[in-house]
Image (cartoon, rainbow, N blue to C red; front, side):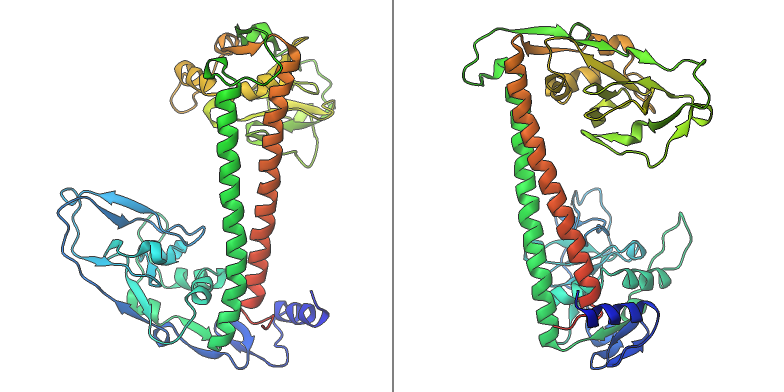
Length: 422
């Protein structure tokens, strides 16, 4: 970041108005940017359509996470509506019931023709504006705060925003050329993010295919160079289960890092920042494990709260909500780990689960879990390495996607308030 931009940003954070800027109702912006109200930019557009006589797409709750649409298929015989309207490209669509949750989005070409109820008013631009720029403005934190202020009602009740109140909200308007330049930068970020999201979806689909085909000998996919037999085995034959736990006589001053069920998700472990003593630890902090052991959540196992401990575990203790699997000699722990994600195991989880609010596997269920495994260790390791590489590629893309989203957010903060000029 350039020195002058950094100084300007720090000054604005302190509430100071740098030279060439002014203070408005929505923040500090460049002097030449126009101040106004949304009614100077938008007007309410209604395009009434007759009630359809067959199932149709209707706009559902707008996602406040990304400002995107969630569509629902409705049956006209079961849905009662006073009015239906049609959405067009570049409409600003607002969910007046949940506007305070940022339920607002800019329609694109793919949304053309979507039908909405009277609770989803559509606004169109009445002057030359960049839809991308304005769509980014309305998704900012300060704009959400404005929406909250005009949405009456308390927690647990509908907080319906009025359309006139929406149009009376303050806004600022840069020159059209500056809007376009800002929109172009945002557009580049969006394209990169969309590309990485698409690539990530492909990688996840590939991993799913690999899991379904490499772990099941009946699918007819075999790695070259291997001819040994596969056998169906119970998990208790392949692993030692829950070998070691802390007992009540443990030194009360024993310090350790505690992993609860929320710490493990889909191969990832969130490590705690600080140790706790046995004296102050939860009563469920009892399971000991060693490097290359598998932590298998027994609660809602279909959510795949599994991970391999690929680190020094001396100072760690896990919750009794985990089953600790220790692969026996001649068995690849990573092959066992990936089998836990297979369709064959998912079916067995669902057949064994007990309880409704807290469905969990018991010890005997886990011991009886079974799957096919090649008896040659090298083949187990070769299959596990392919799946491990697929995971690495997915994790790398996840990190890149996170980096781009953070960068886009940072860029929008400085571009949309004119802190950085283009």
